[in-house]
Amino acid sequence: MAILIANEATFGYGGNITLKSISLKSRPGELLGIIGPNGSGKTTLLKGLSGLLKALKGEVLFNSTDITRIEHRTIAKKIALVPQNAVLPDLFTALEIVLMGRTPHLGLLGHESEKDFRIALQAMKVTRTVHLVQRRINEISGGEKQRLIIARALAQEAEILLLDEPTANLDINYQVETFSVLHKLCTDSNLTVVTALHDLNLACQFCHRLIMLRDGLIYKQGTPSDIINSSSIEKVFDAHVQVYPHPVNSLPVTYITAVPERKHK
Image (cartoon, rainbow, N blue to C red; front, side, top):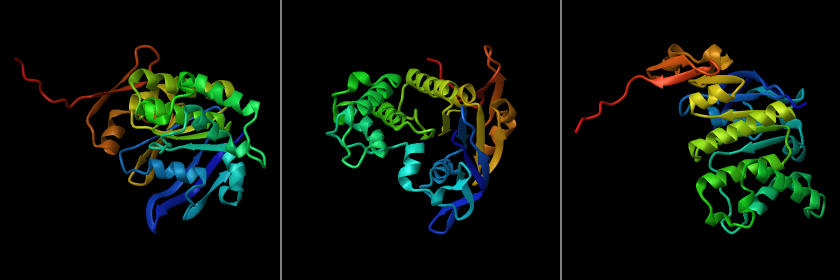
């Protein structure tokens, strides 16, 4: 089981601090959501947890070892980072993009085996992109590209997925479907998923725990019921909302209270 731990970790760029004194622990089989307003450091935190961005202070541990001391190839087999706006080569086919996830597992000659193709196609089935197998990237929509990027991460067979706004370009049905798949992977395969997202209602319905960022610090962390309320949202997001229990599962649902007046014809 793979575990990520941040101990009083501080991250920044060019000497400017973005996140300070971050302490958290991922849990196998858990979907952990990172929420917060724009500029609060969600993307920076994912980069830090992946080892892509080195901590200025403190440490990030992967299975008790400082992540900066682990060989890149080894980390690539264990952790998959899915950026929000990944650039994909236009002339590659969808299958070729997903097969990129197998790169850390290829041998010296670097040729995909039957097993690699089987794993890639299974990842495409899970993300409902298998019908795009031979389509080129310049022939598919932004939402389809995003699902392909998630499929590529699944093909990597990593034990930890770090996702930056994985449903940003998806219609609502695919948003729900994507998070349903991620939630099922956590519970059925003991996968760890850490995802940054803006939609508080998606976060509450699918994440086991949430980390709420504010001004470069962790403001709160806990279950959705623990931290999602009108007071915390007003303080962190500067938004006036009402929070009610969902009629089916009692998880928090956020409603906007300040809405523009509509003119009657």
